[in-house]
Length: 97
Image (cartoon, rainbow, N blue to C red):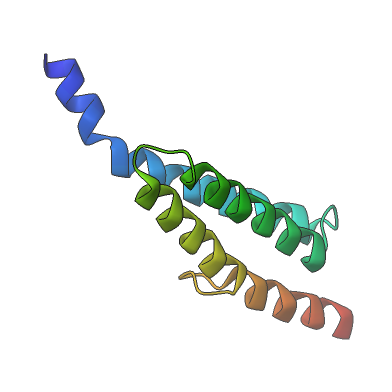
């Protein structure tokens, strides 16, 4: 019983950890030139579209819609680290040197 409670309580923690890891991977791939901004944007658009599609047949469509909205926010630079703006500034700085 205690294991179920602990696992259930990890829900938000697991989601935040996954978000942080994915953001770091995306930043790393872009910084190393494996993805450009258009490809990263496309990846986020595909992920948001998949969540919106999943919402159509889900028992709880609201969670999928919320995830899609969060992904759209990331795509638009609305996250706390503003990854796309930050990367654009880094690239400009590197190209200026």
